[in-house]
Image (cartoon, one colour):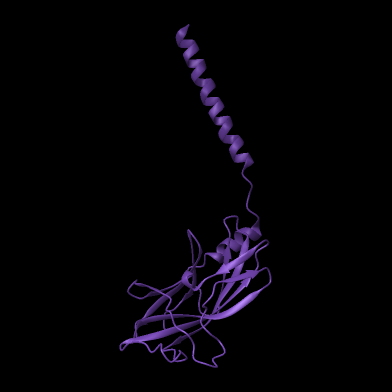
Length: 186
């Protein structure tokens, strides 16, 4: 009799576990095709210069559209006191960020951009000012872009002269790294 009760009890426990798993699967919402498309485009591996990368949240909702419009090696529009050291050059990227977030604002900081060279080394942005009268200047202050707002600015890095470049990244949030442009040949 004890063996029979043990077998029935074990079957009851396994049955309840299976019901819990089935209920959990039924409660998980399926992603919409639009959200799935946004998530795929937001995770593009090697977008080219001029391509738009989509920053999506964890639910697959678009937050911002980011485009690297131009890359300029040996950037010369720096201020009077910002001459690069010998053997080093500035590389400037023209970046446009458009906020498409449904609520709140998108924060953009120059410290969130990273440049990777072909050897795998990562470079942070440089502290550099533009010369007087230059129209497009490096991002100095953090931006807060509400829905529909956009901004175009420079992100400038100081790298070894003629160093081959690989990727430009943006890390808008902890745990989120977006490849903005593949830089082969730049």
